[in-house]
Length: 135
Image 1 (tube, rainbow, N blue to C red):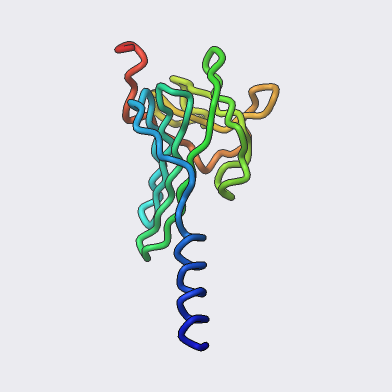
Image 2: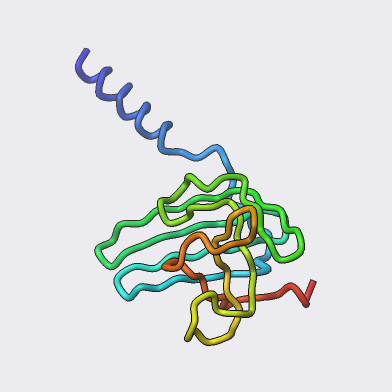
C-alpha cells in the first residue's frame, strides 16, 4: 500500500513538472539584456511571434517564460506582463536613444505605457542582437 502511494506520488510530481508547451526554435530577431552585476535577464523576440524571458542571479535562482508578442512600428506588445516582477508593462519600445539623461545612445528596449512614456527607469535592456534587416 505504501509502495503504491509512493509510486503514485512520484508519477504525479513528474507529470506536473513536464511542460505541454514546446519551446520555439524560430530564429531570434532581437535580444535585449539587463545586467546588474549580481543578476541578469534577457528578452528574446523570435521570428514566429514568440518571445523568451529569462532571469537568473549569481546565487542560482532563475525564472523563464515564453509568450507571444506583436510588433507595431517600434513597440512590442506582449501577451502578458505578469510573468515577472521586473516587467511592469506589456508595451516595450525599441529605441536608439537612452531614456535617461547622461546615457549613451545605442539600441535599447524600454518599458512604456499607452502614451509611450517610460514606466521603469531601472530595467533598461540593451539590444545585443538585431537581425531585423536580415529577414
